[in-house]
Length: 231
Image (tube, rainbow, N blue to C red; front, top):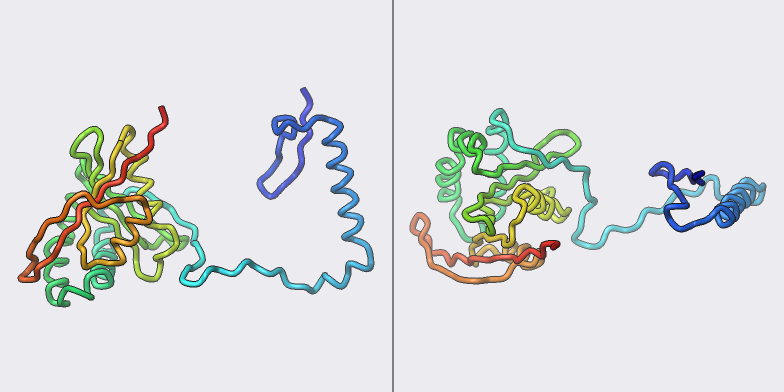
């Protein structure tokens, strides 16, 4: 059966598969030809020097960059540690002293600890890289049961937030664990931006507990998100 292709930016589209028969395809081709003739008319020359206007980015948002989500590599632990240091200061500085943040990150995010996690087959450790190959975000997760995936870390560099990177990293977690019914994580009540982000992603609070971190009292909120699986 013949195809009636129309060339678009994305390539060729089979119009028959879109429910368009030969007669309608002919009308479309004729319409395109008429448009081309009109555009090349002398009176249209006034638009040749017009600049294309791009849609405005909503206030508070930034332009989305091209990303690659991929497994972390041991050779990247130094860069990963730097990303964690920057994101921890950004996220926790409002309610944790800087010396506490630096002490914790030096222990929890040591190159040896990060390398061990990357090499652990039971730990999901992915990074988000921009077009230049720089790590701008990361996520670690595990599967305590067949139905539940626990997100241990989810961080995006301050200059790359509000671009959907966190959501894409979370989607990568779900894709890595087929059959997952629930996502769970913990976030400090004092981390207002983190709480707001997870609520927007569909998480709800299920419990609270009090913890002390280097002499600082924190309220930890446990949250979960039920996934709607296709039958």
